[in-house]
Length: 338
Image 1 (tube, one colour):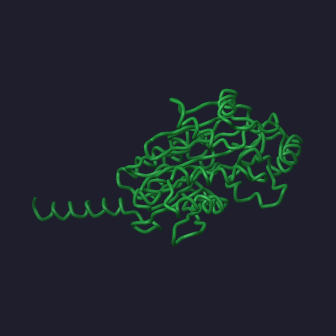
Image 2: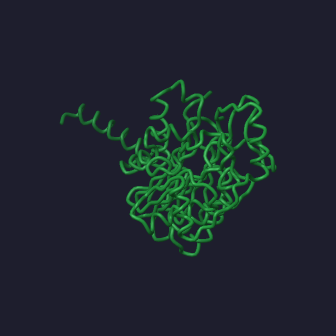
């Protein structure tokens, strides 16, 4: 190799290494750790941390965190969430451990803790996903209690207001615009609908990864609509050799690119969690740039070293992180400036 070619080779090698070491806000070793979507993830992380800080397993931590927010009546997760267009609350959830064991439920009605039903499916059946009446039947046969099919006070108020126009249009970052009152808006004057997803991923002291997602889906959706949240490889993916990722936003767009699986595969190639998330976001935007300017999707990820990161289509996506040294909400970087 002559001097000129050697110089070019070294320059290209340097650029390649720079891409793989994309700036990350986290240290090289950071475990245990739990990271979750949105500011509401702070309380979820606190519950998960009770497990992680006592050398508990990541799978137990993520289930504990998800169950906590499912208990909240004035939240768009769990039975307190907003209904579909027919006035029925349907729940989606999934869970996945370090051995690629996974379980999920979709369109589940009248069961308080869908994430725990998902775990029961994971641990006691050969299946991954149960839906609708079958998922409810399984839950009841395994000790879960059927709750009344009544809307929470805030959900009922929001649904009655929505019926005046019956318009449906998801709004960007609605999770951060609801406010904290008992009648936080489910929609705005332009018909923008409300939604929430709680996704969390954790790395325990043994270096094992797990994740969970729980949601009531988009408010006033078509009855039977299922987004990315209960779909392994879309709303959640865990690979104990590479990392874990989860997502929030318009689930249909995440499904189209198998979003979280894509993020984890990018981490397997050596990309930092932040850059892996960015590359997945770029895939969504590239597919339909004009459409991407009108929607939000955000990814969060953590790798085996405990490095973490996030990226979103639009400004406004935030995520919560808890370690023994960090306990805060971070603003995600974003791709599209509207």
